[in-house]
Length: 141
Image 1 (cartoon, rainbow, N blue to C red):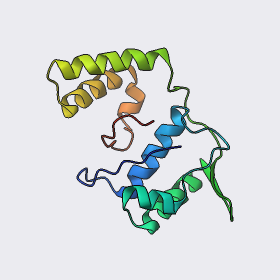
Image 2: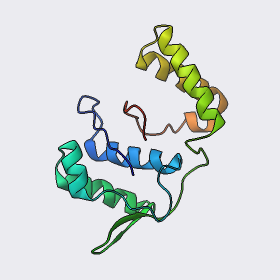
Image 3: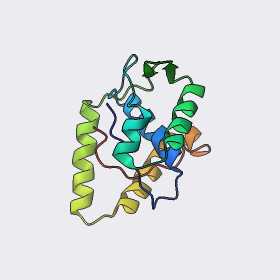
């Protein structure tokens, strides 16, 4: 199950944060095809957002073909994204790196800028069309 964290100071629309966090959970394998998303009511209770905001996010995910709503049953993941499981050895290396970056005094923005610069070097085709802004949310599990 995904645990949504809404950052009201980020400047990123709440529904976009829900879409991004759902995609991240799918990409990391925390949500797999067939898994049920939390109901709109559960998300509202956990995050204190408007129910229409949750429904808008779920409709966007459905439009993208990532989830499907089953009347009377809920919303379910249809397909996966990427190939970066949460237990990947690369994640462990990145965890270590992020811990060292924080210990050395780097702020979130410093780390994000450094990581983005490295990504742009290794994925130049994506640098021209960057992914949507990401909000700080801690551990997605």
